[in-house]
Length: 495
Image (cartoon, rainbow, N blue to C red):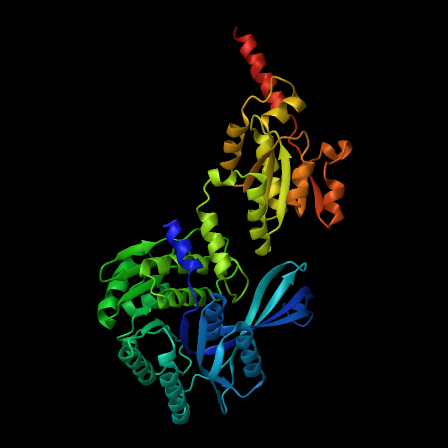
């Protein structure tokens, strides 16, 4: 499976996807929460930054473009500044916006979020303000959209209908688009709106309701995979679909086709923000299916892409490189943590491209004890990726004497690799780690506080390029030497 996923994502090519739906502008207004207002018990924000991103169908189009595919947009916007910004953002993403029409007396759909930053660090959404019109489109706009659809359809490999129930994808227009796509032998994937009636989606190729949406249409609460299976089977038969993908947030997704019924789990995540996760899943599914990918592989890739997205703040794009990196990460296993210095460097370069900070520490780690565990937990708290330079057997003998180490370097590396706090281990032969530190160039160098007087090897080098040296607190009375001496004392007493 690992090889298949990696091969599929790295050979995705540049499929063309027609994105039809409700295009929106997401606005993020950041501010420091400096005090509580004297006028009311609410925080006062000192505005520091305003950011604009593509939302709704625009988010799907931006994500499709980030995956290397070509997104053709059909939708509407207002004749206003928000519409101009949305156009600019879509063009920056690489989307085709020739068929985004301006609607008179109708605003560009926008979602403004006020984001408070506590101590300039943690982002917390305080309130969202929506500006929109959900009235049905005029006959003229409907005709223009349908004409654009007929014009673009022969040029694309896949149709993506992103329905937020904002007035564009009416029953009539939706049915016509699906019928025309079927006649042209083009697949149609639908991200449905929250409604109990899905009849306008009859004849589509696939549909991707989330837990709440599938509950509304099925008439019962989808709380687990078993209920998702029932909802998916109902939709497959009712709408005459090829596939149903019920997305179940942190649990993954349930896939139902005529020949397959399976739960596809996802890896547990540190969820920062779920905004835009469904758009990312939709984009990955569309791009994969447009290239002829099978449903199971497409859903697996969508799980991975959606998982990466929720670890970012707000609506964010995910690239092929990030997905490939994640696939590699998920399949490294504990043995994959143990690297030569040269192979480690390429891994660290990949992490740095993802804006992850590298923490480095080193030691013998001969007989693992509580002090080691707390020390490595401290290292984990300092950054994103923890690299342990492990003294080889030869260098341990030089430092500790001929009777050490108790455990050979392979056993010591294997034990460290089993710890969640450690990402990589590389063995070095020199008595000190200076050469390895120069290769790794960590953002953070960690040593025990007992090195404050002795001097931390590598301090001047790390600080020369703006890195940081941090001293970790020690657990009193805990060391490999003390543990070994106690074991030998007990052995002597038992004789």
